[in-house]
Image (cartoon, rainbow, N blue to C red):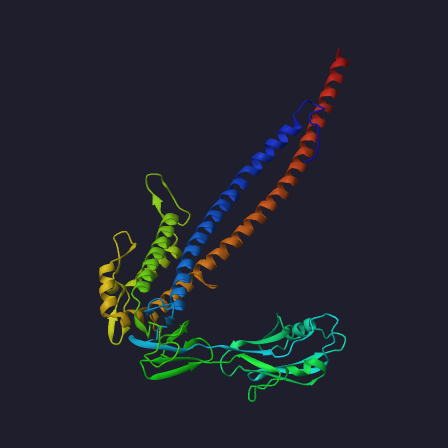
Length: 465
């Protein structure tokens, strides 16, 4: 209702009476809607907290599977300055002696003759083909952009660069071009065909099959080489050896010594590196501890949102909710459900995970330690095999927090209810505006009628006097 002045005729408080009547009409309806909105908001917030905690548990289990946390192996090197090592879960336990006989190197060649470094110098023009291994690029040098700086930039900036860098080296004899392969290994030799060039640039031709001429080799392309257990020689184009020993990755860094062969590595004291692979018992223990903690966090979250206090006569927004209780119930059942590994049935309790009298999980590290010592492979299979604990837990959790999960559906339903209540409030506002306008008009008309009657009565009384 806009600006109004009530009661000008009879003295009736039209505006005040209108507001009172509107309030009497609006209050019970508005209270009903706001109470429902408050309950919906609280339930939506509670489901959001439970879903977030359950999703965190699901993500943790997915990470365990991705990291192979329950079946991990630990690989160690007797000297990481020479060799560092990692192992995947399929690596067999054992130990090996590894000698580093040769490190992988990249090919480097340099021009014998010097080039004029003056930006205005004309070094020639034409087409040059540069290859690294089985990949090549063609460089075209024009006569108007053929300084030493231009040539180096054209090589380094080519989109077809096969893995080579050109660098200008200046000494007392002048400026030379150093070509370096960015890839190590004997197969990544540099080859330059400058037969299509004119001027000084024609001197850049180099063929590793018949080296010489105007180019010199500064460093030969070389494979890395290791010897395993004194007899098995293995080569690699890089200083990383993958699956030379099944499941192991070796990163070699320094040459080991030789045994009186007269080579320049005789004086290296370290003759070989011992590589050891064993079951990693720390990572599974840490993973199971994190699972227990995250499960208990979810349990406590659901309890806090669904508990009821008899003393206070009130409870959380999910009191009596079957969905959140069902989530914990299904997870608890899963923890007690057996998984068969090689004909033997195991439960979480066999690995030290049990439920206390309050419903929370606890971990007996002594039981877990004994099982990791005696049944490491069975322990890993319990969690990671097809249809194992991780698969089953993911299926349960997805049934609640997935796209079509129960909690997700509850949230969607509550959001729809929230929208309907907002619409109800908007409609109530519109109805109350109409009611206010009608009431004001009716009271104003009544006020005017009373005023007229009062005036007519006063006139009649004056005539009788």
